[in-house]
Image 1 (tube, rainbow, N blue to C red):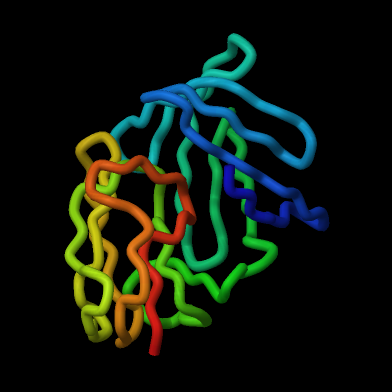
Image 2 (cartoon, rainbow, N blue to C red; image 1 turned 90 degrees about the vertical axis):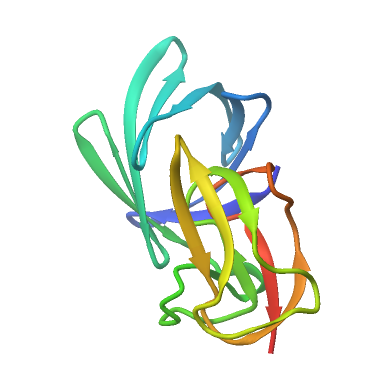
Length: 168
């Protein structure tokens, strides 16, 4: 389970998430383990079940910020670190600080448009991630050569997973 650090208000939390089966997941926040199920709904919505309770959750990411709306409240999380110089694969190029192109949402890799060694330019299509029939096309935030492709079509991915690695 990959762990990422997020800031909420003035605290930093280590968060891990992995899908066990189609809708079952295990997660942890710092040392607290969580198990539950998640059903992806249209748009950026999910139906989350934890400890016998159901929650409708909406998530939206923008740069290094993730907004989570649940139970009538909105929480703003920030990535606490950019491991390996990662950046979100928005395709706008404004937040390019490294070599990793990450998934902008959890879902399934529907299609890959690149192979290792291929040269790409800013704006070229890299991959499509799909959740509940909603497709999100991720484009190259800058030009470079594809150093690694970490997933295949059909693979399930979590938010922020590095799918493609670029080198200058």
